[in-house]
Image (cartoon, rainbow, N blue to C red; front, side, top):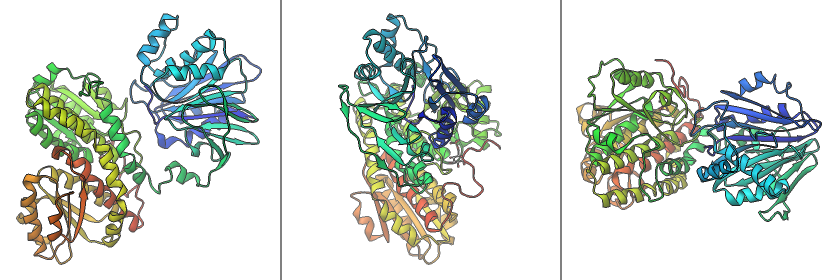
Length: 618
Ligand code: G6P
């Protein structure tokens, strides 16, 4: 299945199409890619030339000599970011019918692909790939031939039949020099200039060629010729569109108008979290881990869980430890990949090793996974990048659907890993009888409210921005909290230090007096996280202790705890949720804090010094 983050480019016009397609696709790099392909057609030939590669766009460029080896003035191209189905040449787009009558690229997801595949199989179609896109293209072909209608009618019939989201670009052998597109819920724009007509998933792909674009509406189609574009609604009636002039520069366009990828990705969290939850919820509203590869029997057999990860993913593990132990009553131990791999760990043969990694390539996490496998212990990976080393080698995989993350400091990667862990905890609890069914259903309902609550917190970002500018030149920041709040502190502290270079540390609030309190001076910023009601009073006491030694206090708690204002100098409230899920909300203001301090200090937020997105060395 192809998710939202693929990139599409198409061109028909005066010049050679392939170099334009490659150039356009390279501008969509931030959408991520693991395979790529183009299809180009010459007016005087019946044949469409399709070239595909697994891997980076450079490979495609090499294979086609920068596009110059593929001749023709009309073509479509695609970069794929797999969320299901290994990245491979076969699964790469474009997809084409056996006789070459229809060829197309797609971005989105077709929900009823199983039913459509069966329907097509009954009508003599066979399939070479695991993609829903191949099914979609062959469905267009089926209607096109069955009703002997033109491309627009064939597309309209397809759109009525298909459930899901798509941005689709198709070429028909019988219509040289033309590209047909259709759109529902996936991004797509069309651009024109005197040389030709362009289509792309996003503005940066074509900004070099034109600033004049049409925004194609939902459930609309278009016919692209050298001279321009004609738009149609589902009935096949023409619709008129206004040309819009793009005023952004290319870099701002890539970041969707945000100043930095980190901010863009903070804003993408509601969607990423919603998608990840949705990927394991079935029609009855229950968690279903079959796609992850865990049966109820597997779950009942687990004696002990070992979570292994690095960086923020390790902090997810710390939060998950509290949640899993509480909801599923399974003992959990959390370890850093770099420690686990050399510790000669004693592992229970009935244990489950859970490796959490956004990239799926972190060397220490991968080594830890191999160590666990060698010892014959079952492994489960929570990974974002499909087909990555950790995903390939683990016995089962829970894919987070964060989409590509570009900023070095993780935000949406972390948030999606958290919800993946909650979902595991809930399902483990239910299957093992540790969780009342009624409470389980409450949790299923509550977890689905998180995206909207995260959205609300982000909307309130100006308050954090103001505070960040005030504390941009702090020397030290201390984060304190207990239980899940301590896990939140670990991540909040990392976010602040890694992007803003302000020294920051997280402490379990009760540990303060065993050393750290001696660092508190007049005006030292201490941030207390208080989302857990049974620990609230205890942490407040710790805050009072540091306040009496001169600390400046920020309190992060839930709406309703307004009495916190008697103790702290600055307060931030997040919406209430089940307290097991608190990390998902409380971390957001802390991500924003790190971001805004870094911006106020004029730092390179997306690429902090000395850090790498994916640490593939020890
Ligand atoms: C790097 C990144 C962190 C990330 C860590 C683990 O340090 O900067 O944001 O948490 O690696 O990466 P992984 O890809 O395994 O989640």
